[in-house]
Image 1 (cartoon, helix red, strand yellow):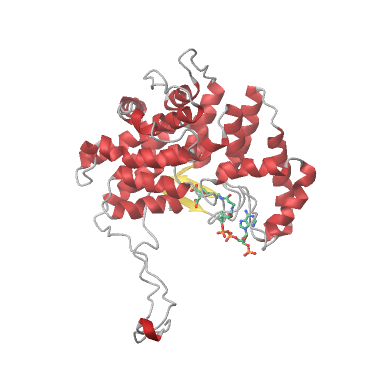
Image 2: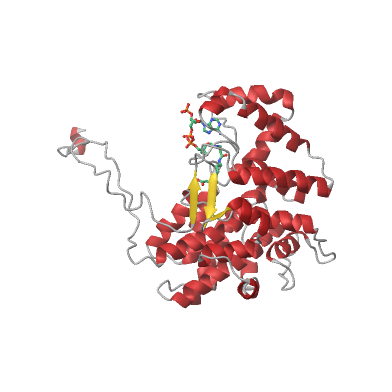
Length: 392
Ligand code: SDX
């Protein structure tokens, strides 16, 4: 009972949803995609295999993998008119603002795959989104640095092609290191899907109204941008730069504990994990490998490791089960590869598009699905007699 209106907490039209895609055990730090542990997938699969798994429910055999990769490769080029679309943005626009705008507009370029009642169009839209996100992301980066757009190549893998479109210039092809391409692919795998997080729930709610898939993914990108969610990887690097030296760590640990201080330890804590995020463990190992392979000696990696060590032995963090999450180490790898911090969340959105698309398909093909309509606990006024303005 809340005053005048009663609230039925059992009525959760979107409070929870059923899914077969991803399982998380927050207390044990377990993450499964269609039953497979994230550690096994990150170690043994390519991102395209994981994309196939999330979309179709099983790992592909060799022929299925090749066919899927060819389908995605076929869709990597974008409509030439989109190049003009970018030119409407200021050069210093945040790449995530460009992603929201460009992806939100895709239905006007690919209106032949917006009828959500047609399974064939749903599949084409799904493939187009997965295929074009690297191209759109790379173009956002190129536009921000004033370099010409680089077209996709069909002879490169998904991760290699993204690195090529991002870092090649007309005068010189980017030399793709196998270690960097593998690290890029692994980062995509680790960010692919994560159950009903804020941005995935946004995509599901938008999709439940019948909005076209491009608009739904744009809604997910908007939500992911927040620093409490996908924007945390960029915020971690900014935080480490602000801390600057390990001698300053205790001061920032105290700031993070101070309820009157808005500062939070970025890359720490999680809505679900009350144990270490298994993705952080894989990324921490990958950070060591990539920096060693690239010969990059980034003091921020050592600072991050020192910060983790101190925080994980501090009662405040231990009592609240605050551990490093997926965002704590990812930025250090991305910085070592050469991405500016402004592109970190763009890469998260690129990878998470596979999960968003898989979850959207699962939602849209569920015959029992209704439009999302969260209920509220009304705590406002009970009914009042109207007061004319001259009596107020
Ligand atoms: C992602 O949902 C997903 O799956 C998301 C994601 C995905 O793959 O989609 O995993 C990706 O978003 C990872 C999270 C990235 N965000 C950050 O790293 C930002 C820093 N983290 C915090 O903002 C916070 O931990 C959240 C937002 C992630 C979770 O916030 P909650 O739910 O409030 O955390 P909680 O309930 O566990 O907090 C318990 C206590 C609170 O203090 P008390 O009121 O108990 O005294 O811990 C405190 C919080 O204030 N706390 C922190 C903290 N995180 C929580 N204190 C200091 N630093 C932090 N980072």
